[in-house]
Amino acid sequence: ATAAPQSRAAAAAAMALAPLRRRRVVPSCWASSSSRGFAAVASGRPRILRSEEHDIVFHFAAEDYLMQKAQVTGPLMYLWRPGPVVTIGRHQNPWKECKLAELEADGVSLARRRSGGGCVFQDLGCSVFTFLAPSADFNIDRNLDIVLGALRRCGVDAEKKG
Image (tube, rainbow, N blue to C red; front, side):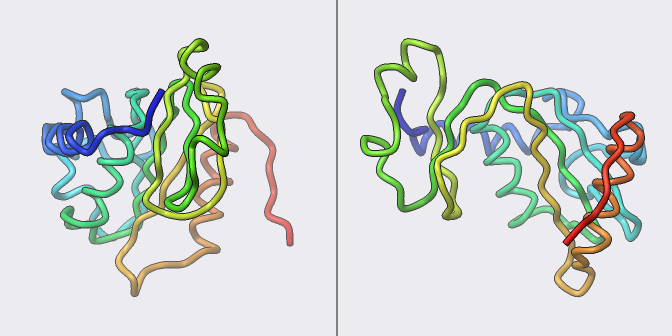
């Protein structure tokens, strides 16, 4: 279990250019069904993309592509679930943070995020989401309302506090 090599990330980024449905990334029931690819994924109103892909490297590459190359013109929530993985921040040392032999024995991947932060274990029981929007449209309260609405549609009673 080692951090994802750069060539694997580059390959995942190339896959992100493929149409969404071919990589099992489909607009969710709350989004428009007209999305054909990452190039034009939101147009003014909030959209949600849901992925059934479990490869963390794919998701990190997809997030990077969405942030750097896609023409996101309105709020977008990218929702996905990873296979068993430990993610570490940009400045963390995997030999100090993880028991690498145990990760490998248990079939748990190790991946490094571009951002900082701590060491996090995730698996199919975790729902991960990324919000993207043009800078002028960023609104934390709207983002939280989107999450709360999505949770309600899934039968989860949640509220915003603090």
